[in-house]
Amino acid sequence: MTIATKQIKPKKATPWLRRGIQIFFFLLVALIATNGALKERGIAIFSFVEGASLHAICPFGGVVSFWQLASAGTLVKKVHESSVALAVIALALSVLFGPVICGWVCPLGSVQEWLGSLGRKIFKKRYNGFVPARLDKALRYLRYIVLAWVSYMTIVSGKLIFQDYDPYYALFNFWTGELALAGAAILVATLLLSLFVERPFCKYACPYGAFQGIFNLFRIFGIKRKASTCIDCKACDRACPMNIEVSTSGTVRDHQCISCLKCTSEDACPVEATVEFAAGKAEKLGAAS
Amino acid sequence: MIRIKTLPLGIIVVAGIFGGISIAKAVGYYETTSSKEPARFKTGELAGLPNPADIRGSYTWLDLERVFGIPAAESAAAFSAPGHALNPSDRVSLLEEIYLAILPKGYEIGTGAVRLFVSLYTGLPLEVEEGNVLPDAALAFLASRPGMDLAVLQRYAIPGASSVQDSAQSAKTEAPQAPQDSAATQAVSSQALAVSGSGTETAVATGTGSGTGTGSGTGSGRAVVGKTTFGDLYDWGLSEAQVESVLGYKPGPRSQTVRDSAAAAGKEFSDFRTQFQALVDQAAP
Ligand code: SF4
Image (cartoon, rainbow over all chains, first blue to last red; front, top):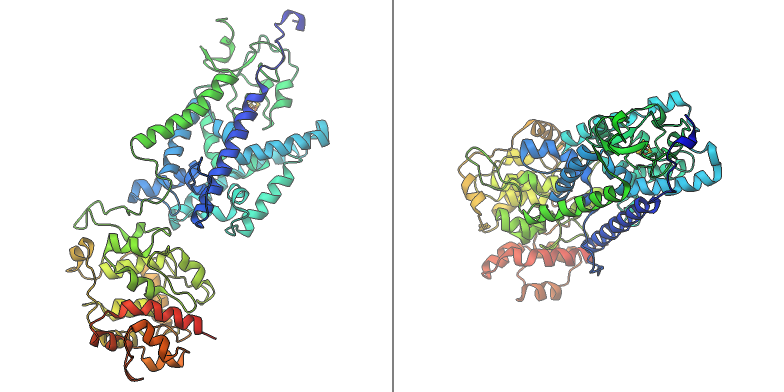
């Protein structure tokens, strides 16, 4: 089978869309969190957006509060109803589409990605390939240890134990004086590492990413590769920020996929309808079209 | 077979988030700030009463008065520290910062201490977090409550501070506090003090071991409490004119307590305490 017999697709349809949504959520979260912090200090605030603490708009607070909510009917300190509501919304999206919150919404993920674009310019093809494969594979499970530790400590203490280590919190609160040294150090390390590795915090340390990643094992919509039209160019593998080997998969069940759709035929894959985000069996893809 | 492309997925993600938020708001489950209404006990005799464990740092003393019936001015004054006179409208989260530099390592006066204070005041049960202690003035305030077990209070004294017995003595010289008992307080007033849970055992161990000092007042000795005399105020740098301007009448002899003077004038000591504490703090060297 030659490339000529395949349907070569027209060039990238909507590469700007995901980035646009990421920028939108980054600005929104920055505005809400800044407004919330200013409001707490009694300073005049931007009237066009409601101020709230960063914890109030982070679904992870809702996740770690579930135990306390179920057992005592109360929320972990600093967590509000909104976090629980957002956690439920994110849960529904994850069951359907996997970690779209990570790939499309999370501002810390976006910042890492933007710095990654710079790293890609500096290191070209070497970018995102510095960590030896075996070490990388082992390190990817570290975030589950972080998730277990954070969940356990939060249940035991009733406090948002992760705040002091959370680079996401540090990113939006560096000016408030509430910044913990550990959180600041992890943020700086994350930003620096992003120049060498794509989304280092997401891959190795993010407890919420770990939680979201579990849904990749059974999400309804997933990345499917149609082997019969695949030309084995490995463009999908190279495009994947999470270093997933899409080119050898039928359906991507990797716990690290962030549903960014970069590998799909709409973006990296040069062949029409070969790598797609769909529900159903991989090989049947395209049969209906 | 359903395929989703980038544009529809983007729309679904954005619409899903904002649609979900709208639904949550519509059903009344999207508070981004603390509602200032703590969760209530769900079962047993206490069902329906507010749970002190759910007090947040964003609560003010006024919120505590509204929910638990503890007089805001009194409790704010009881938690005031030298150089930090608290107002009833202050958030209780301020305490952590204020007491960080004052307390010995391993002890904390913050939102947890306020929960403990409320629990002791109302008799509502609480699992006490390790290391939580209460300022002398707060213990004295609690000791003045009828039926309060001083031995229990002593567990939560700051190591090296005055004993609760001392504070209680001074508190007893004060006129009845006339607390504004809430439904919560009244409902549990017949119960034994029910601070419970394994965390309490830890707090008992630390409190008992080191909480029997014999000093007076707070660590700096400049807390305006029931036994504070006019002489104390003058010694702490206040002029007679300042004292008179706060009282609104001529102060009594040096040996008279501010409390007794206020009672004799038909006024509440709490009306003056915060102002005196602020002046004393200003005058502090
Ligand atoms: S490129 Fe494909 S496989 Fe890799 S994270 Fe994005 S959607 Fe998942």
